[in-house]
Image 1 (spheres, rainbow, N blue to C red):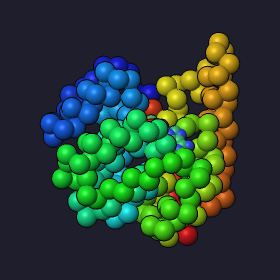
Image 2 (cartoon, rainbow, N blue to C red):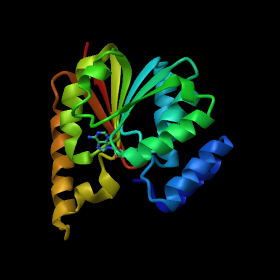
Image 3 (tube, protein in one colour):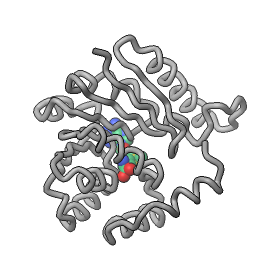
Image 4 (cartoon, rainbow, N blue to C red):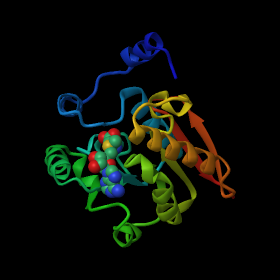
Length: 213
Ligand SMILES: C[S@@+](CC[C@H](N)C(=O)[O-])C[C@H]1O[C@@H](n2cnc3c(N)ncnc32)[C@H](O)[C@@H]1O
């Protein structure tokens, strides 16, 4: 991962954002909602621009920050995003209704493990962005990779989990188990016969998986 000085240096170079995005960033900070960090989201948006993604599936909306940022960065794209937490759904809907980019977004309410039929109805997706319960990454990947377009890309966030994937001794059993699952997912993904995957130490670590031709 980048050292703190370099990280701050890059963050400071990032141009300003719409006031609504700043408001959302502040809300997330104050209410401990884990939204993508700045350098990570900028990297994600740039990948989407390069890919010229027209249809994006996001697993894990939270308050709608990344969904709205993706919609703003790609005005011709539509975003389908899944969230199960009722309070966050309500807040996401409020922010989406206040933004002119909200119209590009379809929010599917429910557990991503249970809403496949709804997601399938909007397929195929050029990009699938996985940013939900880390212990279930493999399941999300297996369910939704079926709906990826031929040149599609799957981006998975938090694969380095604050650097904990390299820690040998972790006190909390819950965190230890989670780290084990993330490591298992990373090993599985890197050796997946149908995808080329690279892990970049950006933000909390993103895996970029491209379907093999
Ligand atoms: C890290 S946050 C998403 C942040 C968001 N992508 C952003 O950067 O603005 C993860 C969200 O996924 C949701 N989540 C976790 N597991 C889920 C599941 N199985 N189905 C639907 N949502 C889930 C959580 O409630 C949480 O709000």
